[in-house]
Length: 181
Image 1: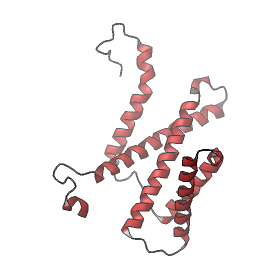
Image 2 (image 1 turned 90 degrees about the vertical axis):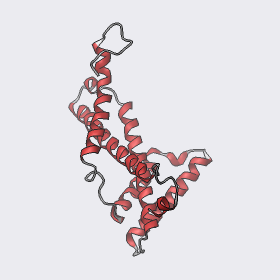
Image 3 (image 1 turned 180 degrees about the vertical axis):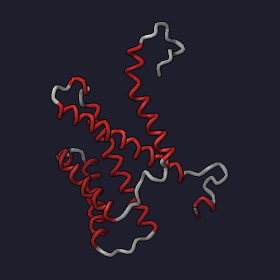
Image 4 (image 1 turned 30 degrees about the vertical axis):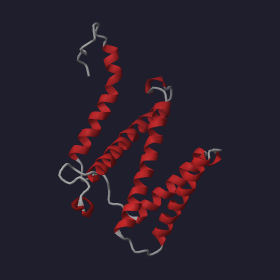
């Protein structure tokens, strides 16, 4: 990041410093996913899915997304509330968990994590710089949000890696073995 670029005639150190946090975040995420691949995502259980479903309902209510006039967003929220209701019922009732139901709840949890991660990324970039904060609690809050940004980035990268694992390779391109696996 600190080396001059090919088409950079005048080296400006400040421009390289401004891009350092982004490079650090990308490097941090790649190294964390590479070295801690098996430890990152905890095993999904009905309790975790319940907690995530309650969290997404709270998130929708807290941000006031239910006040939208868009029919598309209202449809998505109704579908989301139905799925969240099912996962809440699933946590309290002994429903046999099949592989397809487990996959469905895993996808639901991944969608929730992606939405909360995107919301966190958006809120971090809406804040000012940590140096501009006057009070210690404001600096601590911004620092905590940047820490959660790193955690969210790791979860997003891990979910992308899991999705890529489902894609076919060149030897099994949507054939019988691919669908069996």
